[in-house]
Length: 236
Image 1 (cartoon, helix red, strand yellow):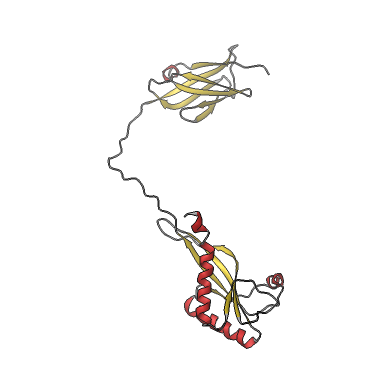
Image 2 (image 1 turned 180 degrees about the vertical axis):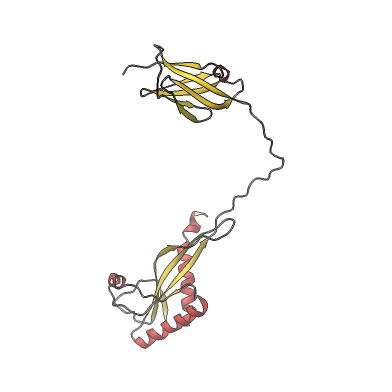
């Protein structure tokens, strides 16, 4: 979904709820998106204030859309309470008949009314669902059957020694080509159970004593006798 389309997501929901309210009250009140306030408007008015957004259960579709609900607090305002109640009744009837699943008659808490600075008043809420369709990424067409190539493998045995032929225990040995690691035992020995058996050399990186060095080895060297790697420890 493009950025300019995201910018219309909430405003499109606002316009839809305003149109529905205008149709329900049939011209007897104007429609506003402002929050409730202590000062009543000069003319009868319906206010649909966006209280917030809430998650919605994911849809069971191959490419599920992003879904949420926009919660609107709807109040009616007029100098004459009878006009307020008439407009609220029209909205309630339209919501029951047309938007029953979205309708919520649980009143807001006293804390919310205090935040608006008004006394509690009759209202209704609508949880308007919003769906944002995700772009479907088409998989490329496979025109030929896949070809599987078996790569012969072997094991790689080695020892990590210092230049003085002392074993380096606990050194980390990384097989760069396979991105796998192991550690040397107390004799400096390590083993990779399965590496490619081809004639190409492979790279090992040794991490020990806060240093690291890379070495190129041939897997054929470490099948029966361990390949010996001499790690030069640099004095700090």
